[in-house]
Image (cartoon, rainbow, N blue to C red; front, side):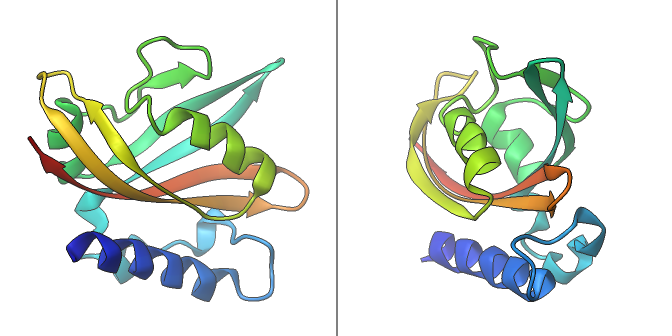
Length: 145
């Protein structure tokens, strides 16, 4: 299945760039190495603002734009936003901040166009020991119903 190949490939790439570290720094991430699947990914910047954590969509692949129904690049949301795009993945972002390890997720949600989306995702943390998780890269495949 395509989904499993995508999730395995992004995880394999993450392991390759992290080497002996707990997680790789974002500067080691080269989207060209995943050129054929990069449109099925998005990248988020994680920022602490006081006691809140906010997420800024730094990149959204064309396929992901189609899933969500709009391009969220440069959109900033906090962890309490009711209309958090891809809200089914949102709780996993909080988990990855604490775990600092890759997570796999699958499930379904209704997109803004009212379509049922069944998805499989690989959620990858990037950062360092001092700052913690600074970025999250998500590889996502889905089927529309």
